[in-house]
Length: 161
Image 1 (cartoon, rainbow, N blue to C red):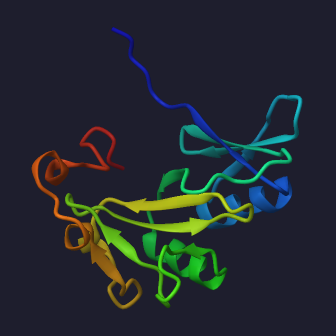
Image 2 (image 1 turned 180 degrees about the vertical axis):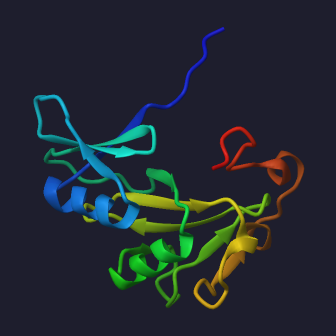
């Protein structure tokens, strides 16, 4: 049997410098050396993995996304709101919606400078400061979570930070 794990994900960047700075400032990523390819690239270290930014004359894909764990959810949430980067699927909502999953993990969505969708994740809703993160919606209130759905996990014991 083959064992596998992720090493990186690669996303579009209209402006490599602007996108790299965004991920450095908001998520604490660090630029690392990157090889030369047929298109301009920038690699950023994210824990023990990398985010690869590449420049091409194409549009960012709708709804494709990358999920990032953060250890300070409130800080990223506040910075995303300040940058007007929060992405919400309901334009009538003033504050970004934070979704609580069946296991108690939370997520919200932002757009990077190119328009890529980034899912920001944290393992425990009970840790959050409700004076900062006020708009929490349980996924189970939106859609019934029965059968396997009620057992869905974003974080596993051996991968939880």
